[in-house]
Image (cartoon, rainbow, N blue to C red; front, side, top):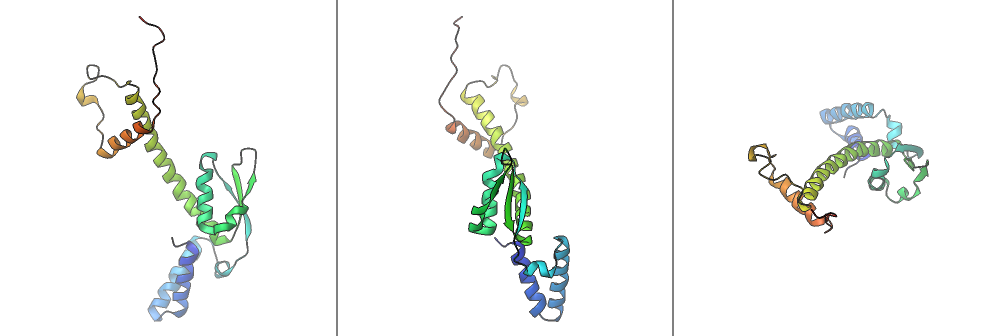
Length: 174
């Protein structure tokens, strides 16, 4: 995966060594992207590491570590924990690494929440089916039942297979 820094460095190289119109367009694009990320050419060439903080929800901690590791590699082993619930993480990063990680966090945390929501829906449906809690046909008309796609049905089937085989037993016989 190409990082923001890699992309900016390629554009800079094209601006420096490209031909007339190509070099001018690359320079304009480079200036635009540097402005977007609030950087300068000096920042682009800088390798100074600064301690940067990230507020990370506990349920996304593992995802956060993988994001950081994908950007900075083994330096991610030096992440410092802070706070009672370890929700704020500190990492020594360059400005560009920080921007890249922030961008990845914004994308992946949103996508992860979206996927969790889909899985949650499938698990609820699977649990209802497996525990025979579904509303019967004599209570609900066929037209009132929600329509499901093949993908949703497969997700529910897979979720059913992942559930434990534990069932409720009536305690009182009537």
